Length: 231
Image (spheres, rainbow, N blue to C red):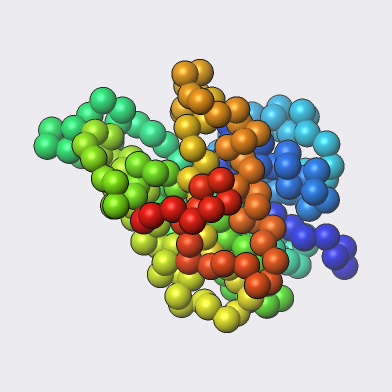
């Protein structure tokens, strides 16, 4: 069996997800680039070096998630790293008191439930080797400590993702699987826009750090720039 670590990155065909794939592949991991549109995933993967495999993955579809994790088990026999990056920011400019609840449902489905179903599917495979790194791409906009108005669907979905990080970390503590949330900061991507202050390489740094933590690394934390931040 190939002893290289195997990493799955959801929403890996662009932005922070693609850069996380690039950096993990450069560090020698086998990278599974999950993309809802497989063609776009293959086009994106052509820009990467290292061992990168494109896999169709729609985190809002339970069958897509189950089929992918089953194929990972059959092909690689292991899954060491999961980066829950897939998500949407679909309510910029909206307010909580006049929210479009259809947009809220869409955000929760992609940003929270998508990560939830993918993590549930991945943990049994990680348990078999007693090793795992689960990284939830969150946002400071989801921090209850500094919660404000605007973008309610996005904020609530990321706050929920942070809660999920704490729940999973508590329930699997001591198994060798570390679970953390990370805020990449305001990054120049399609979602962050060109006005953002950070290049994508900087935004991917903390997710990659959390994906490659040593066995004595933190779990159940929320990090930006590799440092803990308030929930």
